Length: 279
Ligand SMILES: Nc1ncnc2c1ncn2[C@@H]1O[C@H](COP(=O)(O)OP(=O)(O)O)[C@@H](O)[C@H]1O
Ligand SMILES: Cc1ncsc1CCOP(=O)(O)O
Ligand SMILES: [Mg+2]
Image (tube, helix red, strand yellow):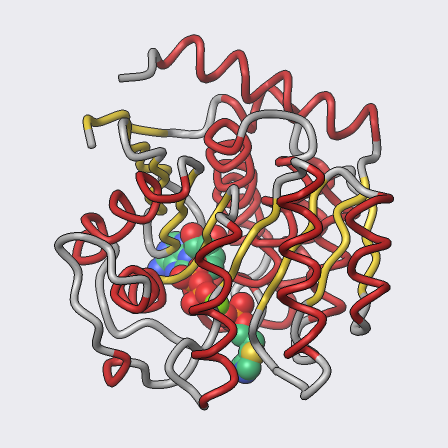
């Protein structure tokens, strides 16, 4: 199990490095929340670029330190763009982050998510229902293939109910998995970190999950997937608490949240309340 002081030091360094290096993490992401993803990436210190076409995805892999693939709103061209971009990242040894938004909706999404198994994302991020459904679709041990639980893009399960699925995914990818929710769970298949904070208002604005995925990719440019995952999730939880002190309704909360992502210091990100458990 990872030691807390050592993890905090690695998180503080990752947050400081993101600020110092302004790293690019390109995205192929949905059209609902694309603006929020880019602005969150910039607010934490990263750089954003959003594309749709296959050769552009490959170009962003080459140009950046990581790439973010979010399945939220699919177009026919994505049948080419998404696997080619994931394959390019894997071939280049660059981390890529998968958000299986809306898993269970439509045949193209199921086909693409099945194909992506072979390219092993460095970080998988989803809400509890998405993580359970992905582990089942990938046929991982102890999980059930049941896409019928999918109901849209919001969760119908608790974070704890998805714990075993997240651990199975992390052991398969040898990367990190994030389950978002009231408290977020991060695992590398050996340790589990529960990160506290945030606000219920984060569930009342679309894009908090997607933008967390973009920020995970920014952090993944600077450190290993597990440290990157805890750092990004901590950064989100810290900013969520601070934004809730400044705003009490969804639209103003979103604005305050982007400001608080920007204001958060590396030390505060590292000091966000976490619990470390055995997987
Ligand atoms: N009730 C809550 N309390 C605190 N934070 C929350 C709550 N609901 C969601 N969040 C936060 O909102 C972000 C998005 O999570 P979630 O709503 O689970 O994702 P998605 O939008 O993919 O369903 C995460 O940072 C998560 O910690
Ligand atoms: C509403 C919606 N529909 C397709 S993608 C999307 C955005 C989902 O964003 P998030 O999961 O971050 O709230
Ligand atoms: Mg989501």
